[in-house]
Amino acid sequence: MKTGPTSSRITEILESSGFRYELLENRIPIRSAAEGAAYWGIELGATAPALVLWAQGRFLLLIVSGAARKVDFRALALEIEVDGIRMATAAEIREQFGLNPGQVPLFGLGLPTLVDRRLFAYDFVYGGSGDPGKTLKVAPEALLDLNEGSRMIDVPCLAEETGKGERACEAG
Image (cartoon, rainbow, N blue to C red; front, top):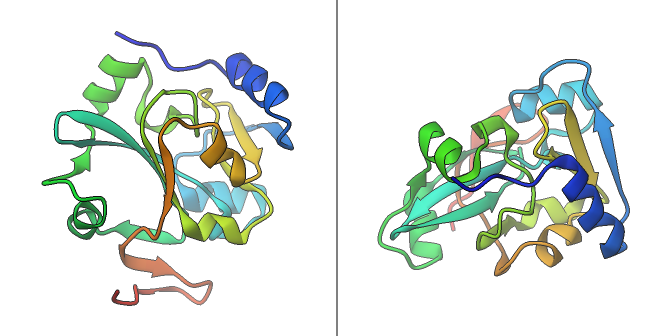
């Protein structure tokens, strides 16, 4: 079993990177993008859930804006030219990285990474640090620079939060 990076390792990486960041203490567990947005008083779109995916015999990391309420995995597979893609199971994430799904950090797993273009509308995004008691606030550019094999994409979604409620995403 591999183990995910600790928040102290995340801090080391960030300190040497030069990106502005804060490691924020949560007084309560944050289990979703909506909870994170409410807790930190930020737009839902500035939350950055890190999702571990499984495609063609390998794990990938998808960092998506919380505004993309439902990712269209079929369209995502076409976009990145893989035959199939699915969320990794909680058991796979624990076995491979020693983490529970809600503890997945924004970087440090050594996985090819897809970063949602929506996140670049914000000066800072908020996401996992590898420690469920801490939230990482970081410039979105760090997500591309600090993840291996990373690329920015337009994450296709089935439903999106607009600030006026949820709606279907724009096609294409």
